[in-house]
Amino acid sequence: MQVIGSYRSYFVWTRNRLMLAVLFAGAVAIIGNADAQESSTQPKLPAAESPAMAEHMGTPTSLHELVQEAEQKNPQIAASFHGWQASRNVPKQVSALPETQLSVQQFSVGSPRPFAGYSNSDFAYIGFGASQDLPYPGKRPLRARVAQSEADSMEAQTDSVRRMVIGNLKSVYFQLAYIQQTLGVLLKCDELLNQVEQAAEARYRVGQGNQQDVLKTQLQHTKILQEIAHHHQEEGLLEAQIKQLLARPQESEDLIAETLTSRTLQYTATDLLQRARQQNPDVRSKQASIRQQDTQVELAHKNFRPDFNVGYTYEHTASEFHDYYMATFGIRLPNRGRQVNWWSMSRRWPNWSVLRGWMCHE
Image 1 (cartoon, helix red, strand yellow):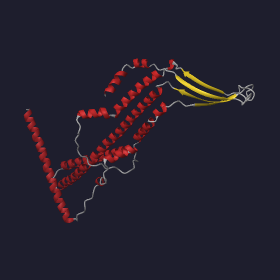
Image 2: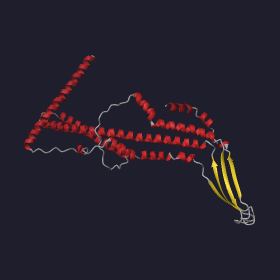
Image 3: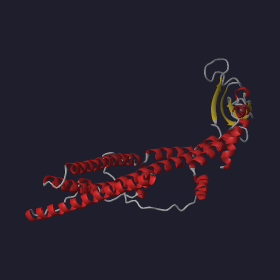
Image 4: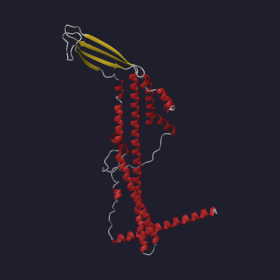
């Protein structure tokens, strides 16, 4: 029974194909007769290009040119790039010494008035001094390493943003090229179906065809027109996305993509995996973040060490008295109650070491 059913379906399929071939041959013959009759009675007119074909007759824009324009004008790439450039100066700032403090003192004797007792007391003076904070040795290099790791992470993020924008641009460009190429095919199909529809209507008017054939051709023609309208809509949306990625105004000139050609992938799966581990910006960004966290832990231990302060003051008295010279050295002890307990944080997040080991392996 299955064999009989398969033969029956094959017979029905063959019969339908033959009927369509006969219908198409008759339509072509009628079109030729109608064209011959019209050519004998009317002068020939030059064929006019359709508006859809005329709008794609400009110069195609290569993908390489669009990629260069996106790298220069895309706002996301520009914002990420300037943020990375700003982060490159942070290591120098955090590794520098704190600001030097300058001071002017005036000491009065016997009265709150300025310079009271200056001429008759050796305690009255005017002083000039300077002081400098000195962090504990090792803190400044660690701060620079933390800032440098953050800058490296931002550099990888900038590369990731650039790759993402360019990837979106390429994807939209390929879709636009496909839409524009298939639109030409649809227009040719529309022209042929229009001729078939006219032939079917001509056969129906002279009594050689039926109304069902006319309705079928009109239905197929309507479907093609719907596909063409849908392609025009998709083309407009894709061009709007490309203009947005290129920071172009939406009322600017439309784009024409180049003809797509097939290319072979020159890398194996192992090569692609190796290149992803070495060149993937997301992996490099996470690795830089892990180095930053490790350095921050080391810096937190250094913060338990005291900082220092040195100062020097020159105190000038009246000419008949001796001047004073004072040097100071101070130690700033850390408040251990305010220090971050990194060991408790490691107990709170036990997967931190596992994540760090995985990223270092990658």
